[in-house]
Image (cartoon, rainbow, N blue to C red; front, top):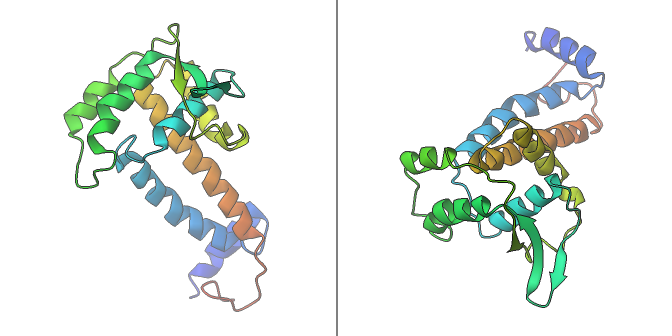
Length: 188
C-alpha cells in the first residue's frame, strides 16, 4: 500500500481535500467507462433520447422554453435533426437485439446541418422539465456548432459534455464525503 501514498499526496495537493484520492479514483474509472458507453451505445436507441436531444439543441439555439399548442409542445429545429433520428433511431429504438452498421453511422456523419431551415418538432416528453438540466448538453452543442459540426457530431458533443459535467459534479460530491484515517482503499 505504500505506493498509493505519493499519489495520494499529489492528489490532495491538486484537489485540496482529504477525499481527493477517491475523486481521482472515480474519474480514472468513470471517465473512460463513460466515454466508451457514450460512443458505442447507438444514437437515439432510448425512447425519449430524441426529445431530450431536440430540447438541448433548441436551448443551444436560444429557445429557453417550448411552444405549447393543443397538439403538444414544440421547438423550432433544422429538419436534418429529424432525418438523423429517423435514419439511426428507428432501426434500434425498442429493439435491443438490433445494431447499427458502422457504415450507416459514418454516412450519417456527412449529413449537413442546414441550420437556416427550421420546422416545428414535438418535444412533449421533454417539455415538463426546466431548461436547466439541458445546459451541459446545450453547451456541447453550441461548441460543436461553432466548429460547423454535423447533426451526428452535435449529438456526440451533447453526450460527451453531459458526461464531463456529470463526472465533475459526482467527483465534487465524492470530495464532500467525510473520510477518516485508515479508510479503504486509501490507508495511511
